[in-house]
Length: 557
Ligand SMILES: C[S@@+](CC[C@H](N)C(=O)[O-])C[C@H]1O[C@@H](n2cnc3c(N)ncnc32)[C@H](O)[C@@H]1O
Image 1 (cartoon, rainbow, N blue to C red):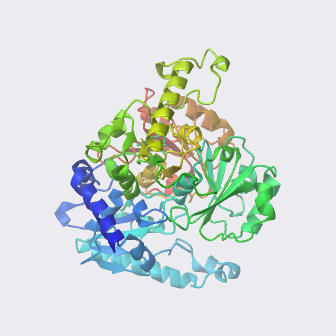
Image 2: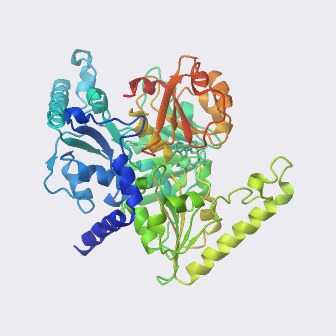
């Protein structure tokens, strides 16, 4: 009971402190790509709300606000229990029984094979009837002026079972409130800074090039496999695709405090012994970057009185995309490191806290000998290799001193700190301390929501590659869906690289300022047209480029 009060207090504290966040969330829906409510008809709205994986404190503030503002909440009994301590469900119509209805959506039942039919407890006709019933209930409520939310676990756009409803109810101008994926929570559990990532599943479908076998084997990319239900079968496939000594990990119950479990090893080692591994709520990682993972199988040997270092994901866009867990860590932190931009964004939450700026983007040259740095690399960000090393050492000394005094220290980073994050080096540097990563919503999750489509629902591809400038050519060869973290790479270079592998009429979209309610913007085009649509000038830092035919199903089109 006491813990429920504490959880409510955190939400209330946030509400009291972050006037900025509340104002912003009140503005949600006014961005150029977000649905606008039609005041003249006093209609309500329909939203899919991503509630994240694991415990309820991985809800973002925006998700809490959306649920609190709704009159009708579609969710399972299990979800209701999970979120109850964090939201106010009193006086709401809470409806169970309409989640995971995606099967056979858009398919003629006559075309369903007997083999396919035998896989599911409900028939194609029953699924269709239930989908129609759900759509009717939502429509009636929206027409009656009510705000309706469907709560979907994780990031609803990544192998999500509810995204079909966006297409079915497209005339209601539905929206998606972004949610953390199990992937974000598993990254945090592993404490592994990832480079290129391939999100995939063990599906084997005809005419698909983006199978595990075809995608395997990249030196720098980490493969992340969702829904590994048959672990034995999966690992026997992985042993054929990867060298036996390739690092691998299984994360079970990511984000669930006390029940999260991480098993690390190699592809060969894990394939040989999968006893006791439950594939149901697991996610599998394979790749060389896992060798850097700072996950510690043994509980910390530090005495309880010693302090702790947290790397905290604060989400992209507006402040209300932070999770409740991130805000709790800030509340208890004695010393906080943050860049200027994050300090400004969270100034209300950070009021009265000891905050040090100037230590945020210190990754260049970490672990490198300055004598080996080439002429081109020298002076990155206006600082020499030696100056970076000095600043890194200064940061580590400050953290160590505070932790030794029993203090809680937090480094705040935007997005998911382990997806192209500039602070992940700190986990390696401070690996002798008790460290924890608080998962954060990535700009990728927010941009997925802005696109209002399932990123894993392409006709030609179900896998999604998160790539950066260096890997466009290598990764594009797979014809998978791609999301390019553009950083400072010139946009035209991306288009040239992609055009070597995809036909000119391949759908692309650019999402600018994902997660900022007032300025988020989506531009759709094709590989052949997008350059001219955007003009050829310098683009702002915060944009992501999507490639793939899943975009044809985007509600914005
Ligand atoms: C160094 S990466 C950091 C990613 C971050 N760790 C995350 O998970 O969101 C920076 C790149 O992420 C993308 N990015 C960051 N914030 C964004 C936003 N709000 N909207 C669109 N893209 C964004 C841009 O491509 C940018 O160049």
